[in-house]
Image (cartoon, rainbow, N blue to C red; front, side):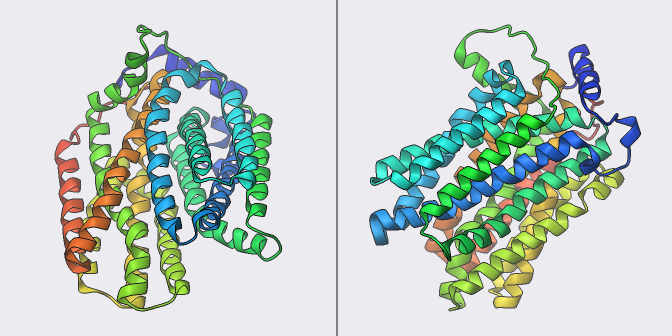
Length: 428
């Protein structure tokens, strides 16, 4: 359901204030990290992200150990299976997950992931690797939307919720910087199997922090429809029925094109065009991560001053011109600066999405809508990954940058046209 005053949502927020040990009024204007329940959940998210990042490095090494030079093909197939699992599982989790207590759901997912990670050192066939990757991706598709749906219940105040979103996004970007360093440190002393044991320990720590947290209960709206497909598709149908969320999704098409260009083609540009070693690839990707964190840090102030809509659209509109600058074929330091600027624009464009969902959707429907957001945005990346890879191979980097930039700008302009000029009142 879209924006409407909902008594169930109001009760959920009241319950959230009751169960949290620091009242909302007493902590207004302070960092979300002063909230003890958020600290525990944030620690759980950080450990969960570390588990995922370290395991990803281990999976690449495991694939090479299994098939040698064909590891790239195996990892490409694994990436496709991973995206497909997320697209299939997230709507089901959004429809049926709220029936379980949030603490049971989130900690249970981490325990399952521990079991899956401990199986990886014993893998000796590619099909086993695929099966475990699909299972772990399903865990991620359950955990992430459920975690995101908790934050607005912890922080009814928009300013503090914006800060919590920024911290969450910083953790996600920080993981991409920290996990390779942690993995490298582990590999100095043991084989890559040790990465899976480290990842399982991190997942177990995440589960423990979740169990220590007091989590507001989710308000479940009584189901009017019991048929499986109708229940599962409810979040996606509600998402498309909400004009502002349609605008969010179109912005994500721009986001997916820009981030896919960075993920897919950085190594090709640095190694083949610039003729630099692997170390240079790491430096360029590091600049993108640092740029994203820098952009995210300013999100609370920007949202307070301009509103979530203007901030998100500004970030989306910047991505197309920045991508087009790549057509000038910059050298190493030019690429570092450009990637940092794109990273900052990505952080600014992505982070306010949770604010828009919370503002436009009543509390009982948020788990479904966060799951729909997770599903549909990953669908954008599923399209963008092969496209940016194909356009560069078919037409070269200058044309690839220009076409991707033009499409990204076109999608952002469409989002400006689609997004309602008058914003509806908050859901609760």
